[in-house]
Each structure stands twice: as C-alpha cells, then as structure tokens.
Length: 473
Image 1 (tube, rainbow, N blue to C red):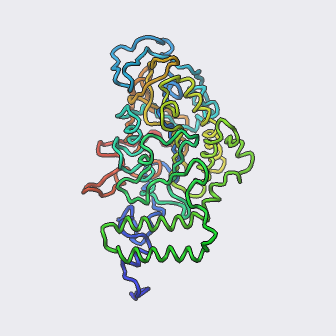
Image 2 (cartoon, rainbow, N blue to C red):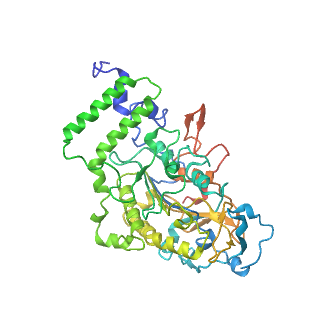
Image 3 (tube, one colour):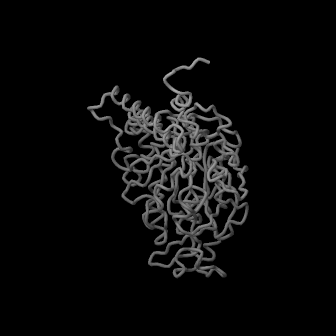
C-alpha cells in the first residue's frame, strides 16, 4: 500500500489519526487509529443508558428520614438500642436513644411507595423510580467513604465511576467533555477528598472528570482572546502536536502526551460549542420555572440540573452533581438538627430533581438516561445528642434510588431491619451497586478492565460482586 504521506512514519500517522495505542479502551474491539473519545459499542449486559446523571447527596442522607419508612422507630422512640456498638458512628460519646423521624411519611403512586414529606415533588415520580434499600459500605468516615462510593476503594488515586464509563463507552460529543462534575455553588466547598473523587487514577488522564466552576465562567479560558484569529489558533495547536510527537514518539509517556494533545483539541472545539451548551437562560421561561432557576431557595441546584439535561442532549456521557459542600452542616451530614439540615438540602434539590425527571421524559430521553441519587453512607436510627438532635454516620445501611435507563419503575429492592439500622435482605455492596450502574450502561464489570501494575484492574475489584439484575425492566 502506498504511503499516504511520505513525510510521516506509519507510527506518526496512527498517532495523528487517533491519539495513540495507549489511549484505546478495548484494544481487541477497536481499530488502533480511533480517537479515545470515539463512541464504543456497549456490551449489552443490562440496561440501555447512553448517559448517567448522578445526584450525589454529599454527607450521607438519612435513609430513615427520606425513603426507608420505619414506623417501628416511632413506637420505640427514646429507647436504648441494646448491644449497640458506640463506635459504629463517628462520635461514640454522643450516643442517644432510638429517635423517630421528625418528618411525616405517606404513600405515593400506584406502587404505594412510602416517602418523607422532604420530597413532595420528587415523590410524584415514584412509579418511575427504583429503590435499593439494602446498600452498605465499609467505612464510617467521609473521605474514605466518598472514595469508596466514587472509585470502589477507600484509598485515593483510583479511577472513579465516571472515568470507567468514559473509558468504556467513549463520548457521543466531539465538542464537550464526556464527563463533567458540578459542585456546590454556595461557597460551601468541594466534597471531602475534592478532585480525587472524579479523577482518572491509573486510567489515561483524558478520562478524568471536567469540573465546572460553580460561579463565573464554568471553564477557564473558554473565550478566545480577541487578538487570536481562528487561523492562528489552529496553526499553534498543529505546531504543538507536531513538535511533541516528534520528540516523544516511542517514549514511556506517549499515552499521556496523546491524552494532553487530545485535551488541547477538545478545548479548542469547546470554545465554540460550550458557551451555547451552558446558556440555560436561552431555555423557554416555562422550563426555567419548572426547574426553579429563579427561585432563591433552589435556583443554584436548578441551574445545575438544567445544565445536566442540556449536557445529555449534546452527548455528554456522565454528569455528576454534588448537593452539599465540605463541612458537617454544609452538607447532608446531619450530626446536629437533622430536621433543619435535611429540610434545607431537600428544599434545594427536590423541585430541580423532579423537573429533571419530567423534562427528560417529555423529551424522550429518560429511557436512555440513568439518574442515580445517593450519598456515601446512611445515618443511624439513634439520636446524636445535642440541643437539636441529629444522627451520626451509619455504614451498615443506606438507600440509593435510580430512575430511567431501563430500570423498573416503582420497584423496591432489599430491606433493612425494622429500625433501619442494618441491611438484612438482599444486601447490596458498593461494588454490587457499581456493577449494576455499569450494566445499566451496557458494560460488563468483569470485562471492563485496564492493565496496571501487572494486573487487569477493574472498578468492582475481585470480591465477586453481582449485578442486581432485578432492577432492570
């Protein structure tokens, strides 16, 4: 075959065409010349989600005050929980008696799902939602529990769920990041562990999450300087790519270099496309009103949920939105005043989340978009002593719900004990949950691997996790 360009080696041509061999997700399935962001064929193992939106309720919402109704708590309010290990939570010196929920519960939908009055608008969608009540984790401390929920391990430095999905499926957009993260915009800080929660770990860095700044321009340098013409900018990028590849072809860091070059190219395309994608004020007034964009109590979260819908429309693969910031009362971490804490964060998120479900459904996108709602652990059914009692951390039980993406609506999986302390029926580990989320996107968690330190690494580890197949319609 005649060389297409005698000025370049075959290796250089492949690098120019697709970003290099080190960036490919499934080498056995893909041609070596493809772009690392190129859409990849799902493995067809479960659901049909093309995009995932994870509403991360940072800090650990209380399952017994939200979605896991336990009338036994009201009957035993104030009683001592016999045999309770005070080290289960984080403040062993503040253990009180069993505490009934300060919120009222009632049933919604044809499924008769019990919901707290924290979520009157989201509760209207229970017949589309799938609840996993028997989740559990291995840590009662925020940072390792956040890493566990995001990366499958309690240690930092590992790839997060979004990076694995990005790696496994590529992107449907060539002008926006495939994985974006939105954090709390009210000066309450990033989640504990910060950017390590959305890092790519040992995967090529091109797959890490792109954090959108909570105020001002969402991404730095999105506007092109007036002095730089499109022709000059294109010439600069081409020259940088040529020089870098000429000096580093065959080196140990060729993969990372190609990731950086592809990031430059993506940034270049984003300068045209991203401003339009983030322009939520261009949405019709009735859509902004439905989300609550101009409402003081929820406008910030409404804007993020509406941005997420616009991202899905434009082919973004994974969107993560953090509700709540760094420190205790600045997140769902209701150590003090569980009534005030959860009331505030639920009020910020209830209308926007309900609107997101409605909006995706009316646009025909809900069936191909998986929404996940949940935090890093749950909370204890006993009181944490204080002027206004709260609840301490509980790694033994928490609820995660999903909606869309091919999951069953109005379905409840697993159970906790009669007071909501421990998951006891059909227990679901974090690795089980991750395997199920991957399956919803058509990915087999056992086959989604990456060679690192001589091992085929995977998100779900080696503890034989199981996909919760019952959640799929």
